[in-house]
Image (cartoon, one colour):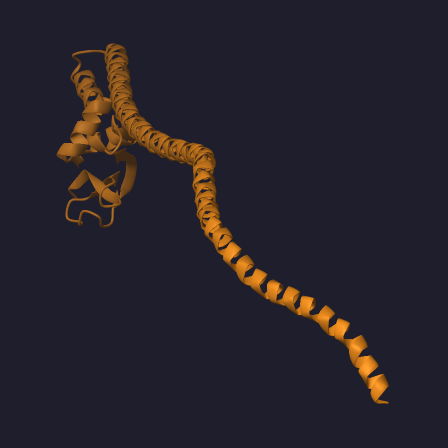
Length: 266
């Protein structure tokens, strides 16, 4: 029976994970297998390989044929080199002790190379992360600087608006106060002008009555002149009265005679 050493796929679509199995060459890839001898995870860097060394060497000596990927894994782990040394021991080219010493030397060097490779990969990974972090910090600082600049601009704009509003309010207040002061000054000056104007008006008013009085006085002489006539007119009645009075004594004087005549007639 032709046996093969191959990979059996597991895992998700983007995260494959393989089992290293011994299976019949006529069986499907993910079908039945004879024995599982290890696992292989290519997602990690470096790739993670778990292999049963003695089982893999035994199946290789039995004639199992590895696939290309499994052959690379066996070469990396030293299974192929150990199989080669054991062939030399069988042929008598080297002793078993020499073969074991060569294998241990090769294994030590290989492990050192793998460790160095792992450290270099870790270093490069660390540097890459550091560079990414520095780039992110630079981007973050640039964004923060831009945000601070915008905030400062907004604050300056708000402060300017507030200052302009305060200046406008102060100017309006000052203008209002100046208007009030001007109105107060005008009101104070206005009564003084009225006071100053009122004596003139009074003098004019007084002058007018004086003029009227003078006219009246001027007219009064005429009246006075007219009064003598009235007096003369009055004097005439008085004269008449005096005449009457003068006549009355005569009448009185006549009365005794009349009395005597009356007495005599009696």
